[in-house]
Every structure is written in structure tokens, then in C-alpha cells.
Amino acid sequence: MKLNYSKILIAATFVAILLCGTASAQNAGSQNKKFGLGIIIGEPTGVSGKFWTGPRTAIDGAIAWSTGTHSDIDLHFDYLMHDFSVLNTNERNIILYYGIGTRFKFINTSNNNNNDTKVGIRIPLGITYLFPTAPFDIFAEIVPLLDLVPNSDFELDAGLGIRYYF
Image (cartoon, rainbow, N blue to C red; front, side):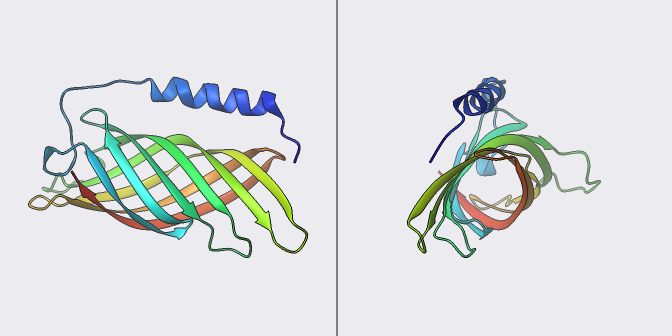
């Protein structure tokens, strides 16, 4: 496995700058709780977490496995911005979100024992529903991906999930 460290450094620097965004004492999380943990089902499928950093911003991530032909492990982190005004509903619990992040995909092809790692940029677009009387949210997202390492490649992920807030 040959990694292009300059591409990894550029992607990591870009994501680090985004993650150093605003922090606020307020929080838009379910029941004013900041951290949620749950599952995401789709591509990839696994454990999902979300931490609200402000009234409209959050960091989410997952450790998951691919539902494709290989036994791939996927690790991703996103910086999310939430827009409460796009959907003109009386309920402020239905929220559109978008963001940018990174993913690391550790590929194991069992037919030739070749291990490889993909590093890419994620652009999640989704909708979430924060339950007003229970510490849960449900979400659906579609995520265009641009892999930078080891080769440039475009992929599309999608998932449905649920989280419990502590």
C-alpha cells in the first residue's frame, strides 16, 4: 500500500480548519442534550455519533462496514450546518443539514490479501427529525464522496439512522 502523504495532509488540514468552527453554549440537540449515539443503515452500516457544537452546528461521525463485496471498514467525520428555515413547517424539529468531512476506508480484498486505504472528502446532505418529547433523532442522508488517496474517484453513499441523546 502506497500512500500519497501530501494529499492526506491537504485533506486533513482542510477538515481541521472546518472543525475549529464556532462553539456555543446553546444547543439545538434533542431535549437540549449535546451528544447522540445510534446506528446508520445503508452504505456504510454501523455506529453513528453526533455532537452539537452550537445552535446550528454539529460534528458527526461513524465507524461502519461496507455492504459491498469486500470487508471494508469505513471511518468518517463531518462538520454539519443545520438550516431550520428551508422547510416551511410550524415544527422546528425537521431540519435540513449539509456539511463537509473526511472518510477513511480500509479495504481488505480477500482474494489476493491486498489491503488498501482510501482517503476522501465527504459532502453530506440530509434531513433530520428531532423528537420534541423524547431524546431521539432520526435522519436520512445522501453523501457524494471524492476520494483523493490512493487515486481520485467519485462515490455516492446514502443512509438512514437513529440516535439516542445523552
